[in-house]
Image (cartoon, rainbow, N blue to C red):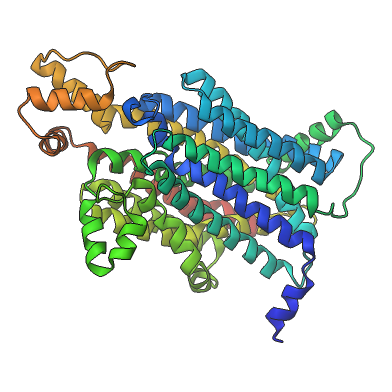
Length: 488
């Protein structure tokens, strides 16, 4: 048996249980999150909710930002009450949240139920990471976290694939099936934690929960007094703001502007089986399947990309990765050609693989000896802030520049056409069909007319510019802040 096989045998059962739970949790989360923008803003006659882009951005941005801030508290509570108990609570909250989201249709009730889902996710996140840490040692940690990262992306790939098939199943409740899938995945985890999860050894504290949370917050604030760390985290907000457009904005852009039937036909010529596996009965490919290419690429070539950037300084690897990200995200939004979108996502994925793992590595490297865990706890802050700003760009900004419904309303008003407002009794689809009829165009012709007239692709300037500004910030940081620290 080789060295790799011997190391695999050293992992305890709880390590594999934790990784299994991570996979099912990612299936549940990404299965919904990759299609959530479509569900929130889609036409009501197709079972979606018909919210505006700004409402979508507000909900997804605020809730996900809170999700990444809460582990500061939930991690401290888990250390106090125990990992197993925390996981049980998490799965009860998580599954009930998905169930509520499948039931509610009013904006604020959906918002509240999604926030409840985020609470469950925030209770889960720190416990699983801590479990993997505590079930590995110096010899096994590198391979152990490699397995963990791979499992994250396996779940992130499988979830959207299943969700896409369910929402296109043709059933009248097809959107509800996506939520039921997430509920089932989380309830599977509840069974795993009850039957197979063994509490790892941890330091037990007699401190009250409030005191533990206060100490945790104080520790983060102490770490942020390090100017070098603080500046780096602020700069990295730009990366996450650009990165998240893949999940917040690109699904809507694909759904509204891109004819994916050409992809389906090209794939059908190569393999009818593949075309049917990834396509829909309508002869096109759903937005979530296209975006899922990002996770698929990571599963396939993350090890190769990591090997290529291994010798680069973390800051240089991050800068290189973000430049590639900016090119990829720009290309994905710059045309209404489906093949360029695919190319953009592939380029984006390569940039992500180069930069994202190095971000975590770098935070650990700049930490003073003995304060690695303390500094690592700050890494979620730019992720939270990035999600918040992504929500604004994907909501208000997208609605103003690129949202097809908003642009059509502007065109209808300029022509003085008499069309009822979109409501519970008059859907987005009906509005579009009526407008096309009154303007003497087919649906495809009206879409192309709006594209040529209002240029919704111009939003790529904003997304790519954020990446370039982030790169410039990192370059200045590397040349001046790090250099001055080294000279000190």
